[in-house]
Length: 209
Image 1: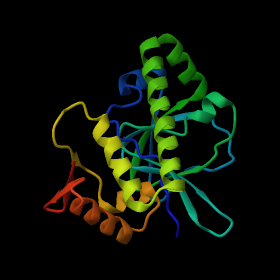
Image 2 (image 1 turned 120 degrees about the vertical axis):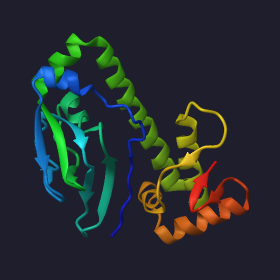
Image 3 (image 1 turned 180 degrees about the horizontal axis):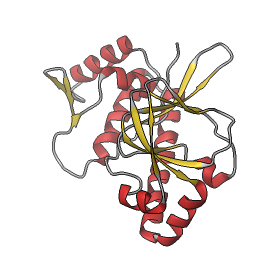
Image 4 (image 1 turned 45 degrees about the vertical axis):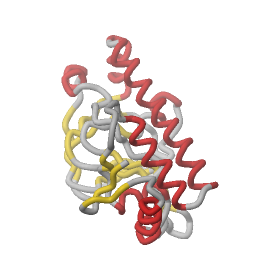
């Protein structure tokens, strides 16, 4: 099955503070592993932010191939664009693990953002970063060979870190595979080649740049 993840949220900061969401009237909702949260084509009426667990947004082609739009974990929101663009969900969302989310009606989200300009600004900045990342990955997937795709992804991650010096990549080979549209075996070979070319290093199976 084809799996290409166009987005993985690497920012560790929650989109909106839980305190603000609770104050606005958000409710906690639990989803079991593999439970559908919403379906492609349905109306978007709620804002979702993960308290614990992991969520995948995806499309299925007529041939049954899976196209992963994004993977989101603790503190992250998902499925927001339709709330602002007045269109239906472009993808489905499913819980990858037992997952607890904060669920806030759209009208209450808009009121919250109006009342908290700083939160609104940070929210907009986060969405802009997602668009930038998706544009980068789309270009890499459609144009460049495996080594280039992987090096561009890892360089992007390193560039987001404010600390100078060597950077430890926290992604597994499987996650790199999903984020670049490559098979795991191809990822392993490409990483070894990048190490031989001294573009990165490998120690105890961890990747450093």
